[in-house]
Structure formats: C-alpha cells, structure tokens
Image (tube, rainbow, N blue to C red):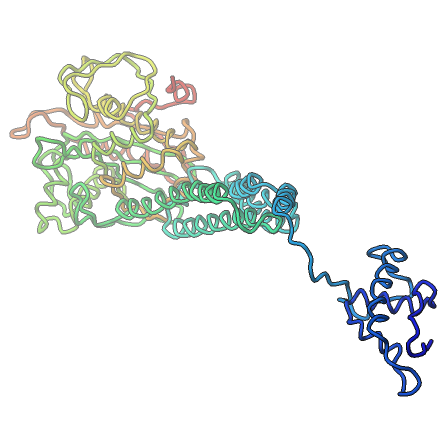
Length: 560
C-alpha cells in the first residue's frame, strides 16, 4: 500500500496482517524508525518522504499494538527467527538484586551434594576401592575400581586357605618374596589413594571443596598411609634381620668363620645342630650351654631329637684326634686356634657331634641365651606344663636376681622364667640330664607358639628379637619345605632322647672337674635307631634314655 505525500499513516490495527507482523518484528529488534521508509520507498515522483510527525507517531502505535495483540514472549505463527540467536535484546536490563542472587546461589548449593557426602564417599573408597563410587552412583567407575581389589583379596584368601601358615610364613622369608610384597604394598596404597581421590572430586560435587572437606581428605590419606608404612617397615626390617640370620660367615655371637657342611641327600634326613650359647656377664669366652640335634625325615614325616651333655670329654675330632676338654668349650677354642681348626669353630663342633652320633650334620642354628629371652617375650610368653615343683635358690642371671622356683602344673612363662626353667639343675633330684629334657619340652612349646596365626601381629617384635643374636646356615629355599613338613608332624611323630647313663659314665678328671666320658659304641647304636632310614619308624634302643615324649594329651595340657 502506497500513501500519498502528506497523508497520515493508517492505523496499524487496520493494516493488513503481514504489515502488522513486519512492524512488530522491526520494533522488537530495535530498528530505527527510518527503516520504515523501506516500506514507503519508491521512485521519485510516485511518493514523497514521510513527515517527521507521521514517523514519530508510528512507534507508539506499533508498540501499543505489540503489547495489546501479542503477549510478551509470543510471536505470530507466521514469524520464524532468521537465526538461532534471533531473540529480543534487552539493552537496558536492570541489574539483578544481590539478595536475589544470594537466594539463587543458596538454592543451587542445596541442590548439590554436601561436602560431608564427598568426604564419606572418599572414606569408603579408601577402605575398599569402588564403594565410594557406588555411593556417588558412578556404576561403571565403581566396577573398574572394585574388580582388581576383589581379585587381589580373593587370591590372598585362596593362598591362606590352601597353604599351611608355617609354610606361608617361610615363603615370606625369601628375599624375592619380600621384594614382591613390598611392591604389591605400594601398588595397593596408590590404588586406594586414587579411588578416594576420584570419589572426592567427582563431577557431581563442586570443583572447589570447602576447607573442612579438604582437611578431611588429607586426614583420609594419612590414615590410609599408616598401615602401608607399617607393612613397609616390617618388610624392610625382615630383609635386614634375615640377611643377618641366614649367613654362613657372621660375627654374631662369635661364630665368625663358620663353614657350611655336607648337603643332605635328595629325600634323605636333614640334620640340624641347635646350639644355645651362654656369653653373659662375667664370662671371657662363650660356652655352648645347650647342644641338641634335630633330624627331620621328609619321607616318614617324623622328627628325632637328641640332647648331648655339655660336660662330655674326650670327644672325637674330624682329623682323627680327640678333644680332651669339655665339649661346651670346643667352639670357642676352635675359633681362637684357626691354624688347628681352619673350618671355624661352628664347623668343628658340627663335625665332632656328627662323629659322636655317626651321622652327618648338615646345618646349624646358633642362638645366644639372651636372644632366647627376647624371643619368648616377643611371642607374648610361652605355655609350659611343669611336671613337678622346682626350687633353685642359687640361680640368677638373665632377668632373675637370686633364686627361682615354680610349682607343678600349667604356667605361662615370660622369657626370663622360661630360660630359668630350662637352665636350673640344683633342685633336689635334678641334674644336667633332667634339664636337657626340660629344654626339649621348651623347644616343642616354642614350635607350637611359632605355628600360631597370631604370630603375624607379633612379627615386628620377633624380628627385632632374633635379628641380632641368632644365626643359621640353613638355605632360605629349604625353609618352605621344612615348614611344610613341620606342619604335618604331630606329637606322636616326635622322638626325643637325652644322652645319659649308661651311654656316658660320670667321672672326675683334672683339671676339668666333674665330667662325662662317652661310650662311643653305645651312643652310635642309639643314634642308628633314632636316626633311622627315611620312611622307617625311629626306634629308641636299649641303654638310651627317652625324653618326655609328648602325646596329644600332654601337649594339649601345656596350655593353662
């Protein structure tokens, strides 16, 4: 429609629909009223310019029309935005009210999960990776964290169920096993930290946690690290301690220069010499206070034990000579005379004991009496069933001032009391032979204590106790086999003998005083039956004195 010059612009309400729509769109997009001239533009002579008065009256009518006919936010169906961003622009929008902004932020914060929940989910994942992700409803991530964790736990439980505890502990003593366990310990710690961190910084939470939440996460990391640091310290301590224990040339306890003996035959007996050394205060040299040979039959699953008197004299040496002094001084003497005993003091003692019994001695275990006290204390004490009351008013040393006594019946001894029970020999009716029988009973009680699963909790103290004054030349790779055999040997499969009259004869020989003279033929005959061929039952021949052979009832009664 074309207006003549000077004519008034028709009312938009009466204009055709298309023109009204165009005017409304132009008004919404804030076009200048001069753009309306495009509607009226024509070649010169056909229409004249729109007057300023007419143009000034268009905008109010168009705006009024838009407000009255087109509700705010609605457009006629025929109108479509030209682009995606073709929306009304509010140039002079009023600033938001601060109170209103705070209210909106408060509502948004209420809709988000709380900081307590993010700390709780992190705590759950630090205990068992994947559980915190379940709380956060992250199912796929929860499965990714939980599967490796459950697999590792399942493998550990399966091994613990299938492998006897003594054998499992012996396997853990291998250097390669300790290194592997330390690596696994570090990986598990990293996995737990990663799971806790992911649960804490989940996308559903605000990326900036509160200070309290951040402190909670730090506390979770510290608590998570404590058991892993403890396990690492135990592992490193075990490596150092057992490197000292399993040594064939150590200076611990004065066993320098010890040389390994013959190796056991495949499937044959494994003969081990146990030596307890008294190097306490007031002594200028170490004496072997206790000597015992333990022989393990891997075929017949039996153990044979024999205790030798320390006052035995005229014992045979490897070179064909005879050692005239008491047997308990041989190791110390051989160490101080390396030209006569080039193999070392311990090897000289092993060879002499082997010639006495007519068997090869393959390995040794050396322990100072003070380390025995520490060992028993580290185990939390030891249970012993005392056969009869004992009283020695002259006994002292290793934690006992003067005098020691005990009543008959079951007792729980600490280290000092256990050593006193094994050493006293002056009570009425007691002698070196009866105390050797008590020493064997203590060894069996100690074996029972070491086979308990509670040993895991006592392991740090035990390592510290035995790491200084205990030594052996047993190969570490033999320990799992020996532990497996020991776990299958019951009380009825343990045969104990104490060498006493008539295998030896008491005498007084100057300058050694009261001594025991061995009858080599009888001793070797006894040993032939006791250390029988692998797979055959040991026998205690005539003339041998059996020790306290523990049956099932006797061993079970050793616990109060």
